[in-house]
Length: 206
Image (tube, rainbow, N blue to C red; front, side, top):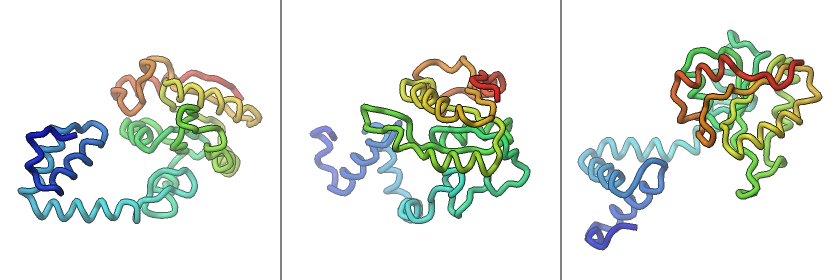
């Protein structure tokens, strides 16, 4: 909540500061700076307003891999130079972008968008398992890499997927140890992430 001294702010300004402060990485002070900066840049304010309103209209999930896309298929799924027999399962598009930024991985992805979490009521029924199975069969995948954060939910999901994928004749691996427990992959430095991907641990060999 805003301090009493800030109750003199116009209602819309105060409300915007409070909304921005709820975003990851932003607090009241940084949100206040952003709002006052926007007040001095009316054109930027209009552009941002338009783009934010377009987000839910234009951005959707790729029909194959569930990555974010403006079209039915994302740019990665449309890229014929990709190795479709190598599949990396990630928890979110942010993780996908982190791996892509390394310019090291040339396979394709599958984005879960959820990790198992009894506390949040997310169970195996919420995971897109049929879509995953379909993609593996369609692309005749030979190796699946589990790029899930070493958190309680990430480890539980990895163990579940290991069991789910056991009937498939494929190599199953997971990012190597080196990423600190509890740290989400999106916050891992590129050097550590690169080594973790290169030295990935084999969980199942065919």
